[in-house]
Image (tube, rainbow, N blue to C red; front, side, top):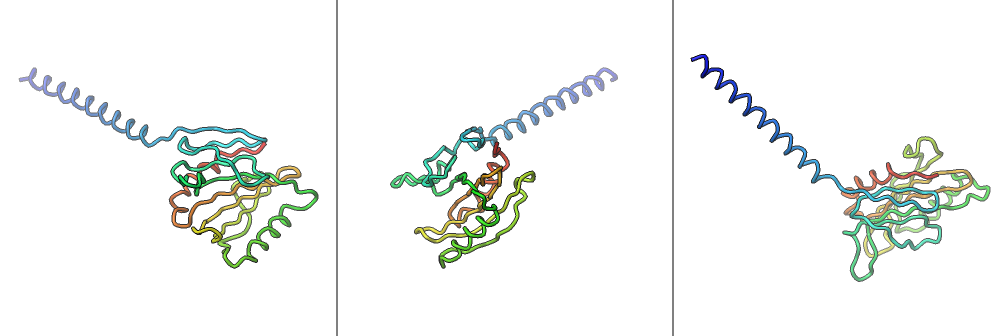
Length: 186
């Protein structure tokens, strides 16, 4: 009788170990499939990390340092991405970042097709003077929502502009937050 109790106890312990190993492997495979590979690009003093299903893009602005776009948002006919991040660098030339920021959004508000959501200080770059503007533009066929973070660095201002169609902005925000948390301005 004693041997059978020992045998049953040993079988139960072995089964528990196998179940624990199986659950551990299941959790590991679940996490691995949810992870996205990361790319890193460094240009003109800016380092940015972004998901591997995004690509470096051609920006329309002469002040652009780096532009990236979500591959899934690229229109086949125009070859333009509707979900993108563009980082620009402008010289302050003796002006303050606040003056340039206010002038930019006063001009933006002069166009009735634009709507400001919020303007103010940003906590995204805690060691730098930074401002944030959230707004909607309706100049194209599809209204776009934007978040612009202005970061002052020496005698320059870097503008990090996140853009997506209004109806997709909330679902893209997790990518924008990841990208923002992985930008370094030297």
